[in-house]
Each structure stands twice: as C-alpha cells, then as structure tokens.
Length: 324
Ligand SMILES: NC(=O)c1ccc[n+]([C@@H]2O[C@H](COP(=O)([O-])OP(=O)(O)OC[C@H]3O[C@@H](n4cnc5c(N)ncnc54)[C@H](OP(=O)(O)O)[C@@H]3O)[C@@H](O)[C@H]2O)c1
Image (cartoon, helix red, strand yellow):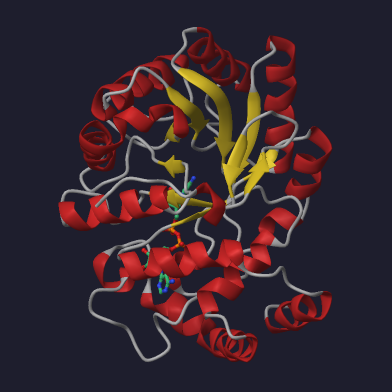
C-alpha cells in the first residue's frame, strides 16, 4: 500500500486549551493488534487509517494478547512503514493496570509509571510518546506522587503531553491542581463514553469544560454493540466470541435500542455505527473518538462519519429518546 496521507479527508480539533490538534476519529489498538491477529490486516488497517487522515494511534502497556504485543506489533509497522512520518503522528500509551508481577507492576507509583513507559518505548522503538496516560486512578498512591511521576516523564523528554483515563470528576480536579502547581502539560482525559454509557455527563464533562481539558472517549461503539454487527445474531468472529470483555448478555440487553438506532440511521442514509459516532462528535466537549476495528471495512465506515453533516437538534432528540 502506498503511504500518502490525505489530510483533506479528516477534520482536526484542538485539545482543550492546548495547542495540539487531534483527528475527529482516532484509532485504538486494544483489540485486533495482539499476537493472534493477522499482521497484514493490522498493517492495512494502520496504513489506511493514516492515509485517511488519522494521525492519532492509541495504545497501552497491556494491550495484546499477550500484554505488550500491540505495542510491539505497532512498533514493527512504524519501523517498516511509518518512521519517516513520525512527526505527523500522535502516539499515546498508558500505564495503570496490572502489567508485571510484584509490587511495582501495577497502580500509580513513580516506580511503576517510569519503568512501564521505558518498557513501552522499547517495545515501540520510540524515544518518546506524544501523550502518556495514567490509565486509572490508584487510591493506594497519593495523587501528588502520580502527578510528580508524570511530570518527571515530561521533563525527561519521554512524553510531550500527559493525560488521565477513567478518573472521576473529583480525582480529575485533584490531579489537575497538582499539575497546575508543577506546570505539567496535562491536556486530556480518556473516559468511556457512548450512547450506552453516559456516566461522564454527571459531573466529569462539566469539569473538563471548566478546566480546559480535552475529552477523547474510548469504546465509542460500546465495543461493537452500537453497530449492525449483532443485528442478525452473534457472528463467530465478533468480539463477543473472541474476547472476554464483551459478554453476550450486554449485547442482548441493548438489542431493542440498537434496532431503533439502526432504523434512524437508515432513514438518514448512514450506518448505525456512523450515527453513534456522529452523536458523540456533536458534543462540544468531545475532541476526538477512539474507535477500534477488526477489518478495513469497519475502519472505512467509521472514518466516513467525520465527513458527514452534524446531527440536527431534532435528530439528537430522537436518538436521546431511544437511549433515555
Ligand atoms: N482507557 C481505557 O481504559 C480504554 C478502555 C477500552 C478501550 N480504550 C481505547 O479505545 C479504543 C477503542 O475501544 P473499542 O475497541 O472498545 O472501540 P469500539 O469502536 O467501541 O469497538 C470496536 C469494535 O466494534 C466493532 N466495530 C467497529 N466498527 C464497526 C463497524 N463499523 N461495524 C460493525 N462493527 C464494528 C469491531 O468488533 P468485532 O471485533 O466484533 O469486529 C471492533 O473491534 C481501544 O483500542 C483503546 O485504544 C481505552
């Protein structure tokens, strides 16, 4: 595949009060980039995304399986195909969940975060990442220590910007205050947010707006539930069957709503996934959404949502009525 990014295909939005811009659609490597995945499909998805204007790729230390494999596989593609485009890419990784045995392979201590990022950089063959996230709040570590570790990482030149993920509103405000004192470039929050999980609307979105932070929702399609994937049963190669993270009961629980969303999408001439993504992109707090894809056709469908007309107020009302 020829590598030739067409930036006109994508729109870019500024992250909070920072100077960094992200594409409306970013690509996440949580699933489909581990050792069980086909290397040629992984390569096609990443290079097609980049050609479609996706400048941002989201990873974490534990993405696989096995943990670390996604960073390693991404590193290979980067080295072979994209390294001359390094300055056109925003690469993020994270630490915060269990990664290695013993007391220093999990949590939010300085020991864990510094060591984990060093390991991630080695796996990806990078000198620095663009955004380094603390993956979840660790209540056993003082928030000041986690903030100091992330600040140190920036001072060491190993990350340009800092983000947090899965933090509630109160903890977001607390770590923001630490970063403000340290003058750390803390710019973004990565929460779970989609039509089936609107928890961040109870306090977190207000905090992000008030503090001038970007918001980059993960699992915008609720791992595939908010698409046509499960409208005719459970495909053998779907996430329900290939991963432990999506129980079949979750799919069945929401199927009635998804059928209604699919009908609205059809009436608008878009797909169910595109309507679910458009709903997120019409929220002023949302900077970008991190989609996953197990095949090129899904990626193409999802990227096209960045080129669609925004939702009208009456369309938003109709969608909100389904998921009230
Ligand atoms: N910070 C955190 O704690 C955290 C947690 C989770 C995720 N994330 C980030 O967010 C990224 C995205 O998460 P996600 O993979 O759950 O996102 P998602 O976009 O909600 O789900 C992706 C899955 O949905 C299905 N899909 C995607 N597009 C489709 C389409 N157009 N039509 C039909 N099915 C479609 C595919 O599943 P099939 O495999 O069934 O084809 C795909 O693997 C991750 O890679 C990671 O970077 C972060």
